[in-house]
Image 1 (cartoon, rainbow, N blue to C red):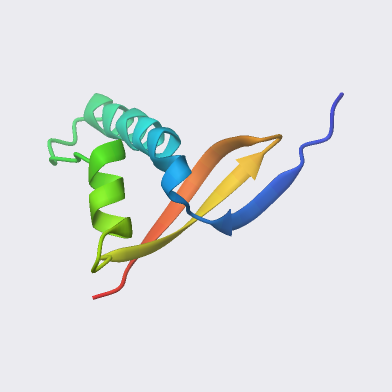
Image 2: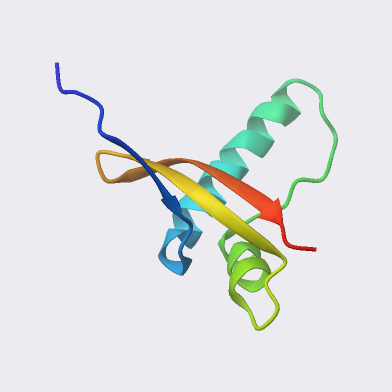
Length: 77
């Protein structure tokens, strides 16, 4: 069995697609439980919100064996 190599690092613009995919998967899971909240984080919103001239959030990602498997975004407001 291959050991899991977990790394926590700052979120980057290059993580946009992975974070967007994870957010959409999580939103689908919550909807399957009956949650009707509008959760609309995607790659484009991640880039606009976190990496523009006035970033609204900072973030971390968890990477395992080279793949983003989790993220944490915190408000800068």
